Length: 440
Image (cartoon, rainbow, N blue to C red; front, side, top):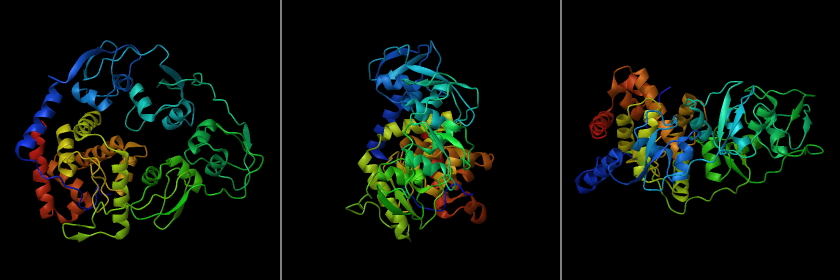
């Protein structure tokens, strides 16, 4: 599978003149830490980079970049960190985190949901890898949790038990009880396929058991016909709902697989109106794109503009820190991001290449497989993870041939292998290699 198809995206021109010089000077200043920092902070026992960033009013990527952390998921007591222009955080309160012993069938996402925290916070607090892999018996630190279950204990079922009837699925049961597939799977130690059988008694956390299942769940939201390039995560983000809700409402499998032409129920939200203006055109470099692709690009552009995005400097810091954490040359990752979007996370191309790293949805699905979790390309952090994961894979498969890896990101690995580099691809590679020298 190629990393990225031969699709144009919003390619940033190489900056020149006073503006470029000023931008580079600002980046250099932030990287060296010679200005813009209020104080140093000594890491306390139990601190995580996530909790420090939250208390200091900044983000993990900024602290990681400013302190050249090789692995942002690991900090140690006594380590001194330089913080940006905010007051140094107060030491974390003694009860700011809980511990939890992993049970068979648990996933990090389910544990996070039960404790009212996030996957990223648990990954950072426990030094987990990009796949967020956990094993039965492992003791996790759960940052920011309140009222967490005791370690190793089975969480109480707020609604009691449910006996499986013929034809039931976990997604349908979760939808009827107002809970999630992940919560039911985790509470009952089900396998990845969420297999159940008639007569089986399930613990259904978070809701009371209904007297009898309704004949068919009412569609509380809107319907959407799947277009080429759609993903469940992107649809959920555009409609202001969650992946779990869409999966449950439509009886999707654990991979949330959908197909072009399929009609989905989108619970809890009305169908978003089409953008009032055409935010993204339908042609690039002489190629015209299908209406459904351009429509999806315009919807994604409207969503990004409506929700807001981090600054270009913040996105650059995220790219650098993520590359270091994932073992990719940060100069390469920054050069690609600069060439693709100029670190503008609101960028969307006519081919529906999204965000800072300009990743198309099909490549986002591949990136999700590479890191072992569902990535939302509209989310700034997930977008960067997707692009860096793809770069890492391409560098590995191309051996020492860096130009081929860069070309494959732009043109697609299979196309480069089959056709060689197109003329615009050769220009792209040359631009990226030139930009790499700026980010050394």
